[in-house]
Length: 328
Ligand code: GLU
Image (cartoon, rainbow, N blue to C red; front, side):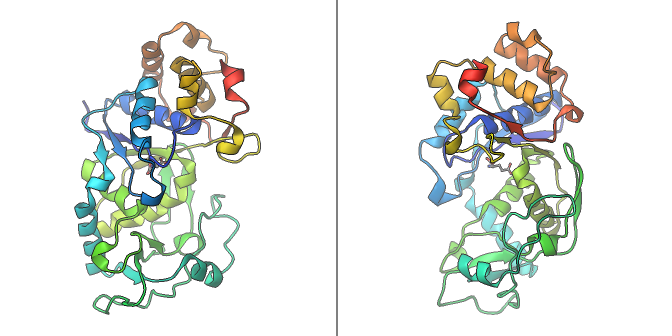
């Protein structure tokens, strides 16, 4: 095994669908092509949206598609002390402040978002107007309202090299702004970590060297790069892979029909069908290559691992129309 560490990081907020499958498969092929250690992390800290059945189902889905990983799954909800420690470190460095603004307060006070960043990405949230940013470390925490901890975004780093999209730039202050690293609570100790903090701490803790995920998270990478810097760690490399969308160009959702992996499994579709589709639509295997048709699941994986190269991955989203009948 090399010193590279990669990860699969499903969120059990619902069933995993075709788009998730393709992202996991690309992450898997990349990891195995580097002879990396591959961890499975269950990102279950988004408590109101977590479904109790979804972790087990995600593991079944990954196994069904022929993926394996090294060691036991890492479960975010079991790791709060680590996140709390990082929150305290950021507080001590005056890099976070308590913020009691509601979503509505922020929407009302935020200026209209810019249409796009310098690299053409659409801002993913209203830019925080700075209402609570005057707080200094040592000032009292709000007593009358719940608050979260919000991270002070700096102007840099404002660029990174993405293995799929090349150099990506933005203006972190104008396009993104200060962002929450915890959920809201009545006391500082009860403020549980939110996605941005948990993912960075977990990736640091596991020594992750490559992050592969959907390109809907590309702007979050600017948030996370600043967290790495504030915590004194160097970031992993990043590869943001295009999403799978419906014919309306929107990311796959219920309105596009049933694209859950569990649904295809119950319908009797083979995992080879999905893995071949992922290999072709991602660009890793030319459309004209019929050789995958006669291979077992394991042979398909071995072939894709053997010829894995980020240069081949398409940047455009893949459109899916009635997958079940067109692919079977
Ligand atoms: N859990 C996220 C997802 O399922 C991925 C987050 C990440 O890779 O940082 O989309």
